[in-house]
Figure: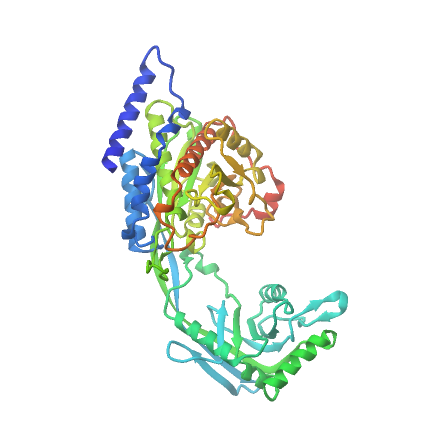
Length: 542
């Protein structure tokens, strides 16, 4: 089928070239090629990208490598230039994947005598359970902060003045404990971490949490970019503490008395002041670091204008997904990610095909276009961060980023209409880019450009939750296209059979038209929303 598509492309390109040369036939324009984007081409590519043989395309996996090979061969067949490492279509980078084997916790008194020592490993449980953070050694004195409440108007402040290098022991009760303030104080004040004592006090709950954490040991968890490791500061540890050990450190006899203490602080919070307990904790993780090599796929279509071709429009999507995981009720454990983000991945291939056909007919884009398929999105926008810090074409020459992540389905709010797409970016960044988008839409598929999530104050914060963010943070205007979340998000049921093909085709055509408009505009769009600049813009590390 791939050969037939390539052959069909050649026929289209030849026919269009012939039209251009004919004396009595109008010259082709780039918008003529929107109709070459169709369901058949999208379906063929997605049937491969979302196939079980790619095992869910987890970053660093063999399945993702297969996907990179397929994308490379498609671009090679189209004649789009390889601009990756060593003349390939891949920009390689390393990620670090820590594998936590266990934690040791040592409590000492003021004289350095060991009061309690325990280890959390595959074979044994401890008197602490690490909830998150704490990937590096943390040590310091323990300070008791009661219920962790602060209300200056009412004279309540359970926090010490100096938290640097200290652990804070706190009762945790829903709707009482101010977790956000605790996190802020510990992070900004350089604290070692937090020791949580959940209320109600329940030893069985603690032991169950300990066993569940124990079951995760030895498995790879988060990934981070290798070149940023030197900037990776020690993140404070959040640990649960065994209630009986907490009572011992507080010099309280039994859990009932411990609960009475909590209640008394709760009833009279103004009377409580933070106090050091005379004990120190050393939290020491045992972590093995794995280095994994992965890649972005990069293909380049040079612009036709001698001056404008130095400027680049970056079209992006992520081609990774979450791999193999917990089986669903059918026993399926392969997370194929047909929509997330197989849909954006194959849309880029169809757009590239249409752009090549236009260029072969003498109607190609004036500015250059970089087709950027990033990996590591599901691990924290790693691939796009790597590219934005190591751009193949200078960020100052990058006129816009057009990003697609999940454009093949519909959400509950739009099941009846389907002719919509959520637009994030555009108007909240650049009025010029927004104008180009609206013109492109009117001249093509006329979708409902839904602004529901297009707000810097949106609690979902979608404006920074996909790969466009790594361009926006550097001052590059972006538009992010998104169909909304559905019930199959990050589930094995995100399969090709559930793709809304007509919607995917129209959205892909819209992105083609917007890309063409940006590539051919007289002036590059500018970031003119000062609030966006204030909130988001940072400086690249390179």
